[in-house]
Image (cartoon, rainbow, N blue to C red; front, top):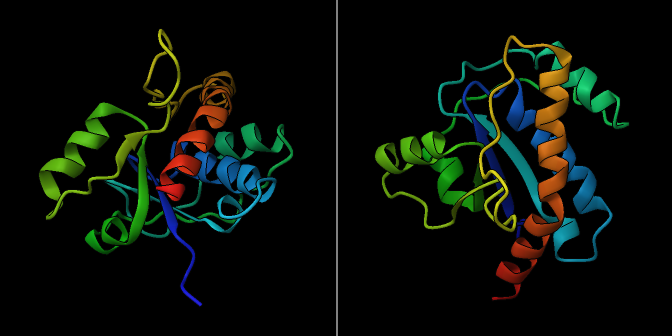
Length: 160
């Protein structure tokens, strides 16, 4: 049986946004029919050091949504992760640009987490690092808002 397809979520240090996004996606995928339910989620950072703990405010923001990401440890983005990913989801255009410039080959399946949101929605999710819990909750809410359109886009890509 083939390994499940991987969705790779990327931010800068892999301690705030991408761990929250991975937790939210895992929860959303669990409630979906196949093949979405079997998608594997991995998160990494374009400038991450390995083994760092997830930020406390990221843990708190997701705990308020009933999810526990406290066990997450950061990992740097690798070419192998990019090569194996069914879809790569970035938080900002700068993340996408860094990946396009540094990856060889650059992934064709590289999107913003909020890319599939209808206009005039902001397509980027700002970095809450070092900010108040409110900033982390805003980032979480922007991710939650994007989930329906993101799930629909992933579902249609799986069928293609």
